[in-house]
Structures are given as C-alpha cells and as structure tokens.
Length: 302
Image (cartoon, rainbow, N blue to C red; front, side, top):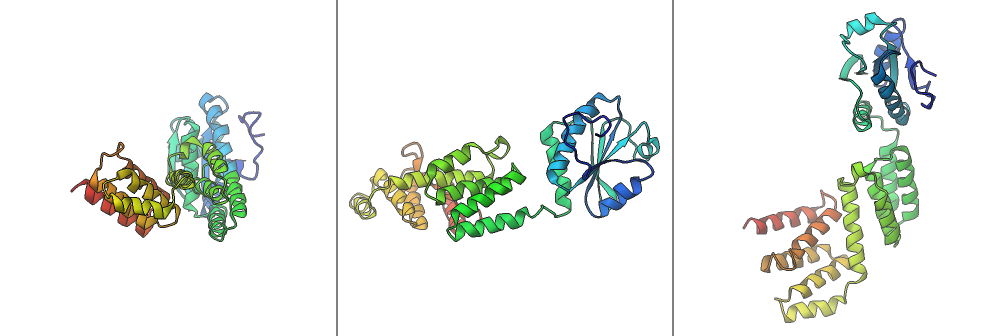
C-alpha cells in the first residue's frame, strides 16, 4: 500500500508509483514521452493530501493505463519540489512530452479531478479503443442488430460510465428493438452529469417521437382532413405526427412549419416544440435538421 493512501484505496501498482529524486527523470520526464503522467506532491502530515490522493488514484485507475501517476513525498524529495516551485501541498502537475502541461493546488471535488485526468488522457489520443467500439456499435445499430449494439454500448459504459455517446446509443438501440419501456429505463439511469448532453437529448427526443408514432392516426384520413380545412391546426399537427411516424420527416417538418406560420401560439406553441423535438432527434449535421432550423428561425424573426 502506498504511504498515506487510504486503507480501502485500490491496489494500482501498475499505474501509480512512489517516485523519488533518483527515478523522477525516468518515471516522469521520460515516461511522459509515451503517456501523460500526473505528479502528486504530498506529505504524510497533510490532511488535504489524504482526501485528494485516493480520489486522484481512483480516476487514474479508471483510465487503465492511458495516464499514470507519480507520488512524490515532499519531505523526502525537497529538491524536486523546489525545482517545480511547489509552495503548498497538495500540488498536482500533469506532464506530457517531457513538459508540465497542467497543474492545480489543493483538494478538488471528484468531478473536477475527473476533468483534470480526462483532459490529460485526451492529449495522447488514446481512448482505450472506445472510439472504435462506438463506431462498431453504431454500425450494428444501422444494420438492425440492435441487441448486439446494445451489448456493445453497455460494455463501453462499463469502461466509461459518463460516456454520453454510449448512453445515447444504448437508448436508441433499445428503441430500435421496439422496447420503448427499456429505452425509458436506460434514460432514467443516465448519470446526472451528462443528462443534458446532445446524444442523450437526441435519444430522449426519439423516445418521445416513438411514443407519438404509436398513436398516430391514418395518414390518408389526416391528409384529407387538412385539405378540407387548412385552418384546422390540430388536424395539421396530427398529420405531421403521422408523417413522421411513416418516415416522412421532411414532410412532417413542412406541415409543422406551416402550422407555426399560421398561428405560432396555438396550443402553447406546440408546433414549435414539436419541431425542436424532431430537430433534436436528428444529428446536428443532418441536412434536414439544418434546413428546418433555418426555416424556423426565419419565421421567428420575420
């Protein structure tokens, strides 16, 4: 167990080492040419160090080798502390390619520690294969293998619990499998830190649209109703819902834009809200979403 480490802290000798002046060059400077290195300056008598240390070690362990940690006892290695102008502890440096690239002093909350570690991890461009796994899962989903996709998304979440892309993918996979309840359940388990992220918001919008589609009326009947009375906003809204359920997304947007143009305040702005839901469900780069947003903005500011 590392000196000063809490008794219940993980055993992580592969990623976390006690470093001295004798091996600082090898374990920090040279090592950082391969992988980012976090250097934790601490002392056995430092209360905040005992709080920070285990939290920092837990995040380094979670990174599974994409970043490593060197613990330097300042009482025993004063020369290194002096060279880096460490004036108070805990002080934490991030080294990459032989140079300090980030630092902070004092005990931080776990969320900020995670951000610090994630920022360093991103420098190396090594995400542990998560990008490839996400791409594979999206391909499975596109090919209709929604169960396999869901399993892969869940595996990614196991590695990175706050991966918004994986959570959004898991929800969409459940939805693609025809199980809106399972999609809702997955949505309810999304960590609060990413609950408002774009991938999760997109998945939430898709759930909402899927539930609307389940109760959409007959397309031909609704079309006839709108043609018989173009001023019937509810009929136009229902027609747009049926169009979207039938996969005619652009046509649904056209009808909702027409409804908004006729009466933007109808039903507490329902047409605009539905448009935003459809746009959110599409990828930000989707040309239909981009065109629809431009047209809606034009109407709003006209």
